[in-house]
Image (cartoon, rainbow over all chains, first blue to last red; front, side, top):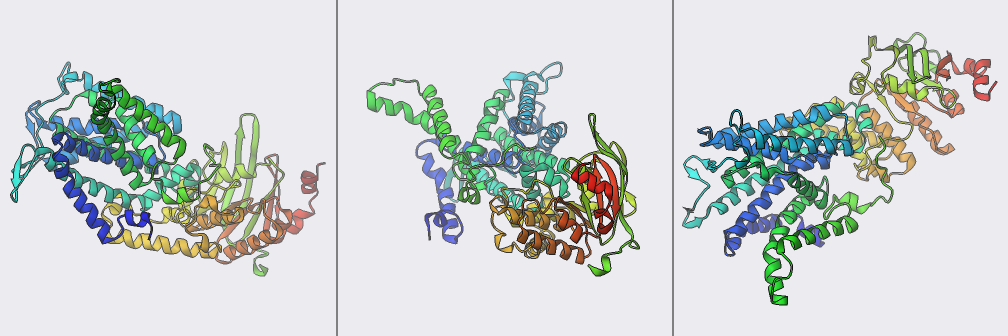
Length: 359
Length: 261
């Protein structure tokens, strides 16, 4: 009927096309080098993280600036349980749930003291929490060496299912798949699972309770929602997703160090959620993919483009990258304040005077 | 309402016992005691700042009273636990409408079913048969309530886009979704014209007819006197009188409170 209907994966044809595109993508990208497959993998990982944060920020309306801490907890859980550092090599089906559980506990630990806070105040506390976790990772190498400090943990086991390892090349049905390509398919499968879970949560009794708290906490209390438990649940669920993503990250990289979990990463993930369209799952996915790929595309595109236009590289690609990136963010916020792909009902009836901040 | 004009033999639903609340030096409630009986429409009136809404907030757990307390269906209400008050069967609306603006009208009412349903995160994730059945029941009940308050055609519109009168009705539907024994309406007729007030009156009588007790805070004296079985008057946080409308209307203290002595 319209472009929108065609784009939305409602029909079997649409689903088929998306499936074919998703399957073909790593092979197409590999022609440009494995680095591009890795970028795609990170984009999917960010989809994961953004969807997790979307539960906390988009649905429950709790501004969380320390989300990367849960990613860090998941990554370090994997690193410690599957590396020569402690000599432990637990299997995937044991580590991922443990990682998710650890992140979940961290989420509740962060959530419980901050239940009465909201808005800016909550953002500051969560920001602090994110930094605390990073600083812990950085300094827990003495007196007992747990995290190996700033050097990080190396030689982390890849994901292994049975005898099948996701690292290195392997041949399946006559097709040779590289390590990143195999991880790609694992990540796509996990991402689909996360999307389904998110959609179901959003349209569930708990999902509605989260949105009710976001809209008006006092009214939510008055209709009988135990806001304390429901908020903690939002923190716990969001954190679990972050923990799983962190585990896959550690296995994929084979290396974790505290510098992967800096404040800017939290800000990035929040920007993905906000830019894409808070509380709208397709929008959040779009935001995550865009913000994960755009900087890389600029990094690879800017220098050759300058070479072509001016014959030499005038501006350092790295600084230009952040400049364009920042400008893009400002423009989106100016012209599409609800995000690039907001929930359709919000787009249809833009409220010129939203009643914000009444407590 | 002929058989309800003298409900003194009916059991007590809610008993406020010397409820006191102060904000700094301002005594908002001074040992207010009153009883609401099952099946009646009970009016709570008083000049602006008399403590009506404070009384509501204490009763529904949003404020912690500084003294006294409430018995509901014979057992005390826990202070500072609005979700438990809702679970016990007290539902309310707000003087300045508080809907979930960016959710549809239907979703607003569905949130009201939260306290009477159980599905958790695990059930939702696996989309279990029990969860799906419960979800269908929630939707059906919510839709029925939208029909009941006569705004079913706005089910899919965002709450913030509804007209003022529709928002008032939606708030009542959301409150009814919690299956209350006692429905507390905080100035439901504020800002309504005569026709809308008439419709509201029919709605409230219908709700009472279904067996729900109604507590009504209202400025519209005509509405209160015509609709309520009994009326309590608050002035400066203290109870002036609690009686049938005919008596209250002619009480000298009430006339003074309203017209100024």
